[in-house]
Length: 489
Ligand code: P53
Image (tube, rainbow, N blue to C red; front, side):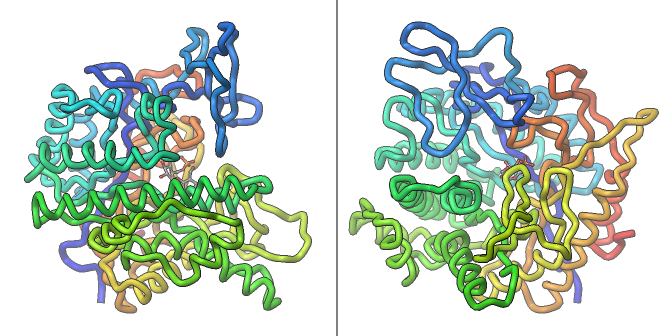
């Protein structure tokens, strides 16, 4: 038993992290266009001016809102990493040629909503934006690469945030639906695989994982936002299949499996609840089309009272996904016991697991956790599965034009071996897209945290030529794909 012959090997990206060209071709701004990186804390900060015109900074965090009369503003002396990304907008032909050289069968990318609808509520899409994505999809098609397209990768048009409050508003469902429908119509025949939302469960998972004593109000907002996104995604899924029955829609779950740190039944129960809240709550709605039984307990726990209409529940039923797609980087151990040995990395927390090694950013390297997640979720949902993000964020050094990234190959090898075990154990795994197959801006805004098989000459201060260089892992991944996952040396 091994990977199926038509297994979809490839790589993954998102628009705001790689395209750049943030104000080119009629694109409207998004919140990320106003984000800089605080050198000391490595936190992202939003730049704005208050009603008196004073320049101010605001840390990015759950529930942050601009004060009355303030507006986001670009400061000339600040560096905004997403403005240029890695210049994919101008270099996609060169990049796609490199993907082809590695033998990619699939490339995951996202569409920037505000490139098609600069404000998010126009009656017709911006033709310039449509033309750009059409060109990219055609280029992929010419190179025998199937696009896998995320519609929303954390990039709501700024105007919608400011005018209606973004995803706190039910009105977003209609706006999103129009955007999604425009994509299904414009790219019919070019795109078959769609992901309505990236890591949809993060709203809740991250609140639980790194929220500092989240209040009931924060839970209320998170559950409500999730509900609107569930309905928007379900309506989009139904529309996608109505427009073209060949369309295939996936959920996109941030797959962080939890482990109990001890065998104390209290830890087992905490672990069980983390799975429910962080992973199963969202997976159930997306895959089964209804809220799981335990959702009532979760809502009660934080006195949550949701705006759910009867029509919403019908939409959820009709809009279930066709495949279980997810990201996987690490596992997290949890305990009810007092401990100071906490992993406080970039976007990760929990108790330090003494059996695992951690990356420079504090992410646990745990290939077995991937097999665990694959087999558990396949048993639960019985849907074809695809890993749409996985990889190691690391610092790479260029020596004489070469990058010797054996650490990256080690990480990926371990994970691909466990994927194979899961396939042997009966999981219907159909594809794998390695995150950041070409270096791109990390979610935290750092360029230094790299994932690619292809290096991009660009640093954290915005210096560099954007020149592309193959890392050692480039030839390695090519061999992996050529041998359909058999040759991992
Ligand atoms: P960076 C945290 C934990 C797991 C997945 O992340 C995450 C995050 C957010 O940082 O998000 C996904 O760049 C996300 C990508 C992101 C990627 O993981 O922080 O979908 O946009 O770049 C890797 O190393």
